[in-house]
Length: 262
Image (cartoon, rainbow, N blue to C red; front, side):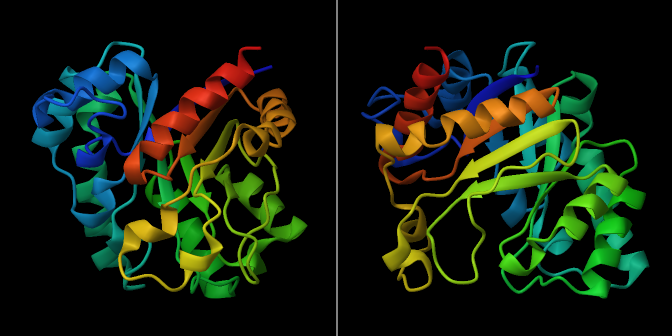
């Protein structure tokens, strides 16, 4: 049986001061503080801006030897890809070169490819998944779908054939979105908690409103047997909380750790 590691999606939030961080903490010491509390971190800034070697090296130096990073693929690799292989390969090359400091330190847990709802189950998109694997043959890769079209046994088997991990999600129960199913398609299990704010998922003034949700203990208990199932099918399972507004993610991450240690 594998193990479950719990963390959050991002760490450098101003509204975590007083909830998780000390009020007077400096931004440059947030990662040091975070890494003392959790063993795992999902980096999401890498989606918005292409990461670079220097930045990743600085982050690696602020974390202990047994710490792990999951890094979200840049938007050019999931939302804006050109389907022109030469152009896409340049993006992949830049991204993977930036990972070298944490890769060499043994701290690269995986790369997360989160696709938008408009990325549907088509032959072209399935071929793109193969392209990703071909470009990153030695990396631990996780695929997150948003569109329910991908909920098919054939899709999960396709991911297994490519050794691509499947991202299980908890999100609002809205038509077209993924249900909270659990399955393993590689040796790495992956779960993302996005919150259940159905009212703000599609209609919001600010992106953070979508993830403004605090899970109750009872809601997390629903996931306890699912997480145990996943750890039984994988070498290790990463559980990340993406409900980051107002420190909800760290509150729920700690709550889940307590549940799993019972």
